[in-house]
Amino acid sequence: MALAQPAYAPKPKPRIPNPRTARNATQKRIVKTNRARYASLVRVGAVLALVLTGLMAYVMLTSNVTSLTYAVAKAHHQRDVLQQQTAILADRIATASSDERLAAMARKLQMSDPQLFAVVHLAPQQISTSHLAVIDSIAGWFTPTSRMQAH
Image (tube, rainbow, N blue to C red; front, side, top):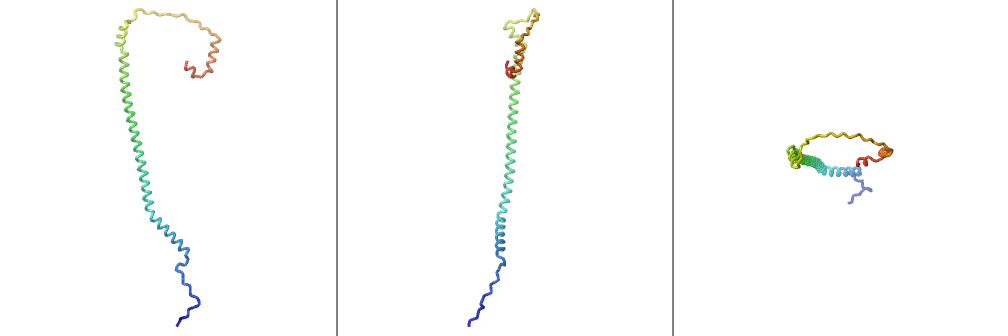
């Protein structure tokens, strides 16, 4: 015999009372899992970036100090060369202006010490003040200084 079934079947009780909340919770869990998966990679990358930045700064500073050291060594070398040249030129000047050399050149040119000294007195000259000289001096006020220095 067949059993009689009720007119309506009772609805089974849902496993999750609010499916939207469950979907949101699932999405949040997925996002959190993905972030946790890549978090260590991001941390390692950040640490590597910091270490490389520090290393590059150190290399740049070291290269800067090295180039400055070479520049100082070059300047010292140039100074030494210039001091040596100055000493050589000072020696040449001393030998060229020595009394013995000048006396030998004077003998070669048949020069001798003066036997008679003469003092000559000149009569004072009259300076005429013309009007043109005054105008010329006034005109000098208006000329640029570069022209005056060129004369």
